[in-house]
Image 1: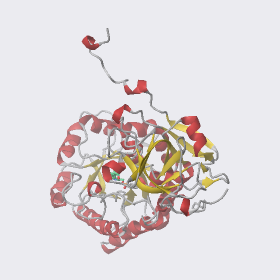
Image 2 (image 1 turned 90 degrees about the vertical axis):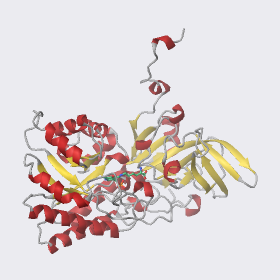
Image 3 (image 1 turned 180 degrees about the vertical axis):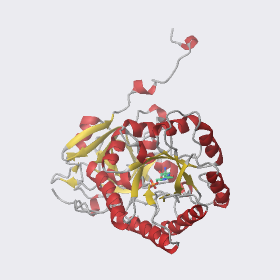
Image 4 (image 1 turned 60 degrees about the vertical axis):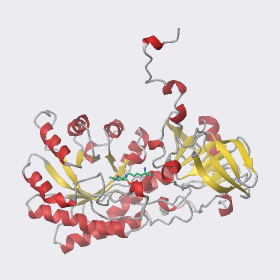
Length: 464
Ligand code: LLP
């Protein structure tokens, strides 16, 4: 095996396969190697062979990277926080049975935001005691589901509080008081894409911090509920540590207030948000640095307030699953517009990765079967959807490629599959989990039959 040369990978960095490396600072999954013939291997499997066997586009998840990220969060919290702690995986980043089960095996709990994510987590065998249910507009059916399985509910607004109280008498499965955490908008700005900021005051999420007195008074009046603590989340793909440091003193302040009112709350959840390296110029802090920052912040704020250390939770999504996955496509048509641009079309696009068209997100790419060839062409990678904006990467340097080559896009684990669609009635890709030369199918490729499975044809429209 040879190491990758930077020139061969658009905007990418290289790393040895050491697991102390923070996966979120790497563009390539940790197990990636290149053989002397220039073929990319991931999890000990040749990317091109995986495509041959499972088809394309194909999500390929490197188990080593995924487990390493889980372990680094878990170990960092053990190391930097002397009180009790629990890392939750924000399953909105990628929810399916295998991913939920794997993170749970690594000791993580789960953040879910819908009945569907909760169902998936429970079916994957995740302990409901370690599941926290989010959402700014949970349905009554979702609240009932949460109450019956015994997961914690992160209450977001007044309607929800009233609905929870209203549901209690009718819920026979309830033998212990439901655990409810309060989500408050922290009012902290951070530099990230406008659509993914949630912590500033103008946000649909959480209680307005100016209403905290009323919320706590409601809690005092309802002792039939176990009010466990507070939650705040400031945004996603954040590279600065300061906003999270600031958040720790804000959230501890709420706990001080609750305790002074005689509410014995004991959990603080500081959300997720640590960014990942999509391209070389991205420079996120490591998982350990981020964890140390929030743990120290909570410890110091509690010391200053003479408060015993609460149970500390966090809920990263992107930095756990994002760097673990690459998407493999087959190169198809090439369109060369002299002096303007060369388009290279692949067999997927905005339906399997809606992030470039939604957020103008940028990624790194390589040709998996020509890793040693010099990147001498500037091309634009186009998806196959009927939409001019369906461009995965604009003007990237790649080795000259041919129809049938395998193009891989790195860092596609988070918010790709989970936001995938069937636009243009394109079936969603398959996903494999790879490790030590073994590939396990974790999502079957959708078929055309799947696409019409829920369609109903009224009688008068049936073919004659
Ligand atoms: N907790 C809460 C309450 C959240 O809203 C989120 C993300 C997380 C945790 C996990 O954040 P992470 O560690 O993944 O940054 N679709 C967008 C990202 C939306 C993030 C939504 N909330 C994207 O593709 O960039």
